[in-house]
Length: 255
Image 1 (cartoon, rainbow, N blue to C red):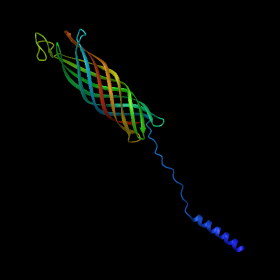
Image 2 (image 1 turned 90 degrees about the vertical axis):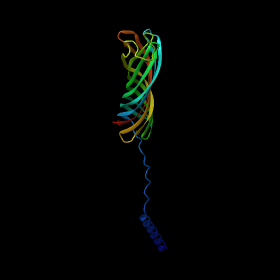
Image 3 (image 1 turned 135 degrees about the horizontal axis):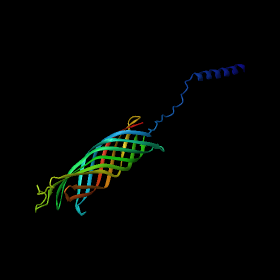
Image 4 (image 1 turned 135 degrees about the vertical axis):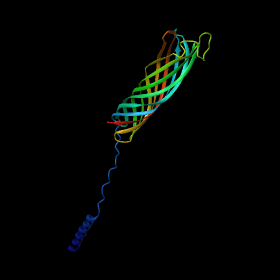
């Protein structure tokens, strides 16, 4: 009996020793979680791109009578800078505000004639700017957003008389028998309207991002007056509507 008991005890001790020598499996590592990119904060940047502008004008003479309705198109390059602030919330949405300004070179030349003569108009838009809200959805380091708000710009027109109906003459043609032929006057001013569009922004580093953006601008009721000294009957007033489409690429640095 004692031998049986001692054998059992010896077997248990040997089994415990062998179990202690077996390798222990390490606990499973928790899966790595990639942190979401944080779009919150102030940023500043620059952009370049191209723009296309379409104008529709009603032209009135010195008595206020409508004498012509014209349309024109112009295009060119633009570039400038922007500054803004983003706030990321719940948990992938981003809301923000941005202000920008662009120097532009959108220009064209248009000829038009009325019953009293012809004129050549050189139109140019040299500035565009906005203050807009932004609402976007973040997918890791990509941001898809829409934007809209107030827009402003500066434009100018040089109007040159090229032909005058006088002494039985007809236009177009020339030179016409008038001291008004060849006279040029300019009119310019700031325009106010609205802008809306959207874009995609890609954060390629912790503080740097690149974007491509489309914006539509609209400026209604642009009034311009053209007066020729000594020729009160040659005064012209135009009411114009401009629509601009721009596509631009940019880079932002986030603080």
